[in-house]
Amino acid sequence: MEKRLIWDIPTRLFHWLLVACILAQYLTAEVFDAIDWHFKIGYFTLGLILFRLCWGFVGTTYAKFSQFLTGPGKVVAYAKTLTNKHSEEHAGHNPLGGWMVIALLLLVAAQGISGLFIGDDIFSNGPYYDAVSDATRDVMNAIHHTAFNVLLAAIVLHVGAVVFYARYKKQLLVPAMLHGKKTTKAQGISSSRLLVAAILALIVIAAMYVFIEVLPPEPIVEEFFY
Image (tube, rainbow, N blue to C red; front, side, top):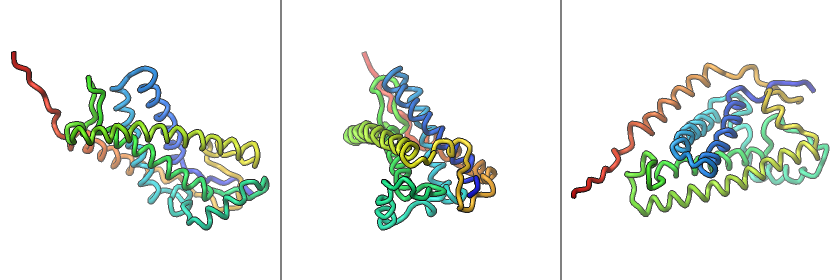
């Protein structure tokens, strides 16, 4: 087996930027009460999710959903090998890990999208706050907070799995997400397709600008007469 490039640069950047964003979102909401920054980082996080969803179709081999999303049969078969210390390491995401990626993406997306419709009732509101009714805002607020609690549980499970693979199965997943290489018999990737990633990033930035700055309705301004 040889060390081969598996994780491209865009996938690795996405992973660590998402980690930083989730931490920053927690700090700005729960520790520093910096709601304005909470919204701004939330928009950036949504952009990351949109990029990753698109990269799952146009990215390199192991970043594509078609490579790591498998049917229930393969998931169950893989789950039976979890206690085997000497089971072969997958070059990309294993069948269980692949579906965990989707779960994390959906949870972050749910929290980010719901945040567009809620506010702090004082200074900061999401761009689509005035586009929906009070009842819808209440639903979105419930989704926003519930999704974050479920996300925290998923993150604990994810970190626990990484530790389990490192300590029990001697498969080091974190270093590979830093330098991109794994020791494997599988074919590696030849490049990170950075030009495609850059074009996609520009498209995502433009789309997010339109979605956040252009399409939302004008805020309703209440006038008070004395």
